[in-house]
Length: 176
Image (cartoon, rainbow, N blue to C red; front, side, top):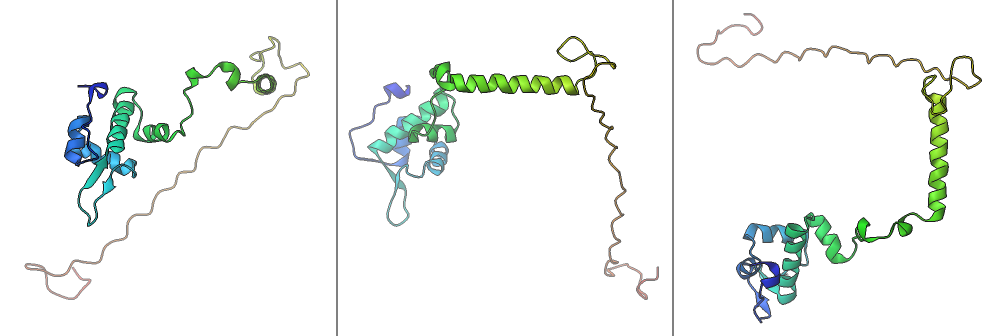
């Protein structure tokens, strides 16, 4: 029986076991979802079991679909149910993601990065196809990093002698 075929009885309130049966999930799963979705269910006065309204049962079915069918995490399901989740990238046209101004800025950044690469790259490997020690391009020499200095850890301090027990030598402390 899938979520689409789940029939919610025409009642106002449900016990946790009934919600588990309707949603076909284990009780520990429902308890975990209660932690992630605090508005799920209504605690009974006196600290008894939670009771679930019809809208809570519908929400449990939505959570199950989002987690088990769509593969979202509980946090992702919570954002989607709260309406905070941005639409998936494949649903948006590329023009809304990258405006012409953004595209021009990206091209400018790309050009700047390429010029930096040509300055920093070894001779002959720059993107211009030329390069050599006699050209007018500035050369930046970076000294190799010195290896990390290794130090030996100090040995652990000796513990105080154990109290004398059965069969231990009796005598002055410190002599053995």
